[in-house]
Image 1 (tube, protein in one colour):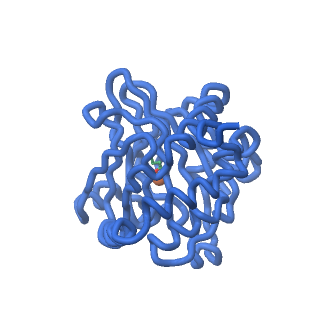
Image 2 (cartoon, rainbow, N blue to C red):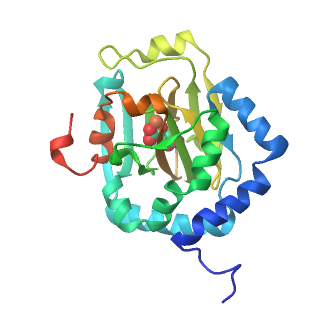
Length: 262
Ligand SMILES: O=C(O)CCC(=O)C(=O)O
Ligand SMILES: [Fe+2]
C-alpha cells in the first residue's frame, strides 16, 4: 500500500501529528506561538493539520454532521443573551462515529503541544460531554455569539472556513470573566481589547476560554464554516466544581438527560 496516499486511520493520528509538529511547531516558530498566546490569550496554529489528515478529518466530520447535525437557535441568558445560530453534534455521537476526532483529542502529541504553548500541563476534560463537539455555520446570519467556556482552554480545529469577507472569523477579548449569575458581554467589550483572527481549513487555535470572551462573527451569503471544538482542563479545573449549562443545551452534553442544567 502507498503510505503517502493511504487514508490515515485512528492509530496513525498521533504519529502523523507528532511528526508534523516537530517540523511546523518547533524552534522559533514554537517560540512565536508561545509569545502570542502569552500576550493575547489566543493563538492561531497555522497549518496545524497536515493535508492528508485534514482530508480524512473533513470526510469524517462532514459525514457525522450531515447525518446527525441538529439546528440550534437560541439566545442564552447565561451569556447575556448572546445568539447561537448553528448546527451542532455532541460528544456521544462523535465518540461512536468519529474515530479520527477521538484519536486526535486523546493523542499525546496534541496534549504535549498544548501544554507547551500555554505553559502548564493540560488534561483532557473531566466532563466527557466537552471532550469534542462539532459546530457548523451554514446559513447566512449563523453565528456562535459572545461567550466564555466552562474550562480553562479550548482547542479548535478548523475544517472548513469562509473567506473573511463572508465573516466566520474569530473574535476574542482577553482578561474578561464570566459571572454566570450576572453575565456582562457589553461590559467585557468596553473593558478590554477585541482582536479578530481569520482562520483557514487546516488551521487550529488555542484559546484561554475561561477569561477570554470569544465569538464567531456571523457568516453571510452562501458559505459554510465547520469546526471541531475540544476542551482542555488545567490542574485547578480538576479540583473546581464546574457546571456545563451551555454545552448541555447546545450540544446535548453526555446525552444523559439527568445532567442537563447540572
Ligand atoms: O467556532 C469556533 O471557532 C469557536 C467555538 C467555541 O467557542 C465553542 O464551541 O465554545
Ligand atoms: Fe467557546
